[in-house]
Length: 350
Image 1 (cartoon, rainbow, N blue to C red):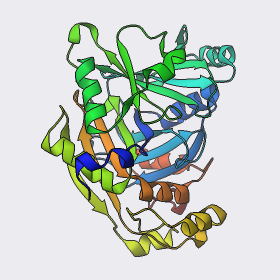
Image 2: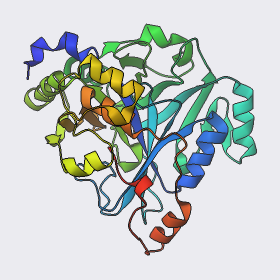
Image 3: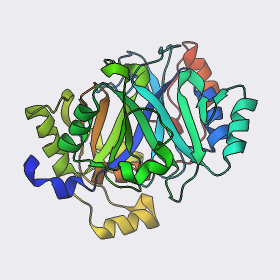
Image 4: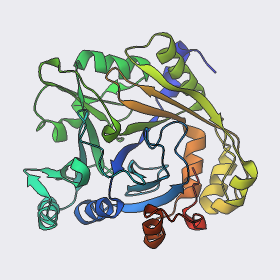
C-alpha cells in the first residue's frame, strides 16, 4: 500500500475496462449489438447465486454475465451484459445518457438498426431495454468504443471527483471530433486518449441524478497498490463519493480455479516471463495470487468497480472465449424454473 499523495504516476496506468448493461432479453441485445455494431461475444458465465458485491444489482436471483466487444478484455473496452433470471424490466434510469461506438460504415449501421425495427434519430439508436447508442464514423484510433456519456448534476463537482479521487485527466480536447455534437456543458475525463473516457454532461438546471440498476456500473482496472490509495481517498475525504462495498481480496477455492485453468490471482505485477508464457500458451502459465476489488460511487451515485489491474488482466485473458457457445436451451429451462447444473463451458471464471 502507498499513500494517496504518492500514487499519481502509478494510477496513471489505470484503464477503463467495461460498462455494465442490464438486459431483460439477452438474445435480443446480442442480436442488436452484432447486427448494428458488429460486436462479438468474448465470454459468457452463469451464476447460481446473486453477487455478494451486487454485480447483478440488488436482485436476489441466479444471473449471468456476457462480455461483448471487439477484442480481448485485457486489451480492449467492452460491455458486460447482466441478465437476472426472472427480471423482465429494469425501468429506464436517469443517469446513463448514451454509449458512443465507432463504425466503419455509418449509413449501413443506421440502416441495419432501422431495418431491425429500432428507432433511429440522427446518429442515435434506441436499442433493447431503452439504452441509447450513438453511432459515429470511426475516428483514427484503434478503440471502437468512443466514450460513455453520463448525466451529472454539477459538472465541476463531477470532474473534481474523477480527477482528484481517481486520478483522471481532462481529455476534452482529445475528443472534440466526436463530442462536439453533444449538446450542453460537457467534459471528457479519463487516463489516456487511446482509451474510453467518460463524457460528463451537466443536466438541465442542475437536476438531481438518481442512478439505479438500469444505469449499470463502471469498471476500472487500477494497479493494486494505487487501488488501495484511491480507495483511501474516497474513504477519508469523500470528494463527493462513497464506499458501497468495502475493499475485498478474492482468492477463493484455489483448487477449483486450477481445475478451470485459472490463476489464483495476484496484485503484484507479474514477471515478464509469466506474460510471455501467457501469450504463448495460456494453459502453461503458472498460478498467481489475489484479486482486490472495491465498489464505490462517484459524486452523483454512479457505481464504480475498482479492480486490481495486474490480476484482472491475467484472469480475463485466461477466460477469453470468443464466440463461445451459449446454451440457449439450458437457459430456457432455467428461466422456466427447471435449473440444472451449469454446463462446464458456462461456469463462472472471473
